[in-house]
Length: 556
Image (cartoon, rainbow, N blue to C red; front, side):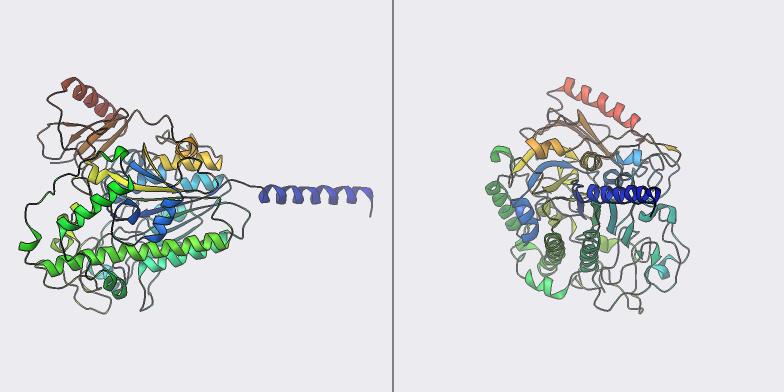
């Protein structure tokens, strides 16, 4: 062999060894974002709930819980904000996934933003998503009713250019729409291929957990770190759960709304969820008594199904933790767990069946009952129901209101950060630092040593709004947002970094309320009349924010 050949072989071998050594020494963490759907602030055990969530509690015991972490008050806007690091209007989904011919209301992710997956993929990460997408425009078909029941077939559930695999994810298993039958889900796809049939024993929460484990097992064999977005549908309505899981909670809620709410508040105080435990629980928003409730059996069962759905999700998270540990990945994986908004007050049984994402029959033609008179107990595939406002008030203890509102009960989410190798502050404790779902993008970029682009695929990209949470994980403090803005269907709010918050509920005739969250987290004392200068200042900030972030007034 001549010298030139030897030299070429040596260079090639050196390059291979160098690349291999670099890959093996890639110390950037894996990142997993787990998003629950309509989970109440106090549903988990580690936030005061009676639902058994040992795996989430374990994450909390070895991680950091946030008491002031914010969302965009509804599913699709929150997902848009989380994925892009922008406010939801900037990301294109100010309301729902329907096109409204306005930049902030496109009904799908804008091309002038990038997703976490797109940025991290370019930075050398494997990227996978499992679960609910709900950020693509979902136009209705003439045969929507039959389509929802799997009686007719259409190839696309949305424009495939808006599917996860077209927005940076290498792999995707989940649903494109926002609401599904848990036992036979509509809009289920693998990559971009529709899944036409599921096994008889199928349950989507379990299927999503199993798929996540398979992704981890595969990605762990690669030298590259990975980013996983696990977006559960649980515990969003319909109330669908496995019989054995419901059985576990069959007697838990028979004492009713007040008893459960008071017990949660007591446990929250014992756990130190809020600074100095000085927070007052808001009064229950309903005056009727459980003892006078003629539908006790139905209502107790509804909350038992809700609990069963959360319980099954927690078990799946336990499977994920086991897979990470077995693959030697747990120590250097940042796991963020949160909810997309407060628990929902909706009575889905009063909606029109057979429309949008609400089927009226099963695949084999069985009628699905929407129990408007609570005549059929919830839980099975043959019913579509939700827990309603009274239990939502309990799930969001100690706050007022719920999903789609701009009070704390709508926009404040429980959030857990778990990262054994990187968490250096207050392990097992709480932080009162304020954060927002759009901060997750900045956090991922920070940890991945990636760059947020000014242009992507030939499109000018909106500057990122989020700020990294890494300083909070490192030493408990960061220079956060000067203020956070909120708007959804004319539910408006702005929170300043000094603790003042203005709220304008939809239909309030333009009257702003003012609360000091430093000593009134449950928004019981409206101080607007006593502090007109503060209100005026915050209104100015809100209007400037709304103009910059593509917010327009919702139609009356």
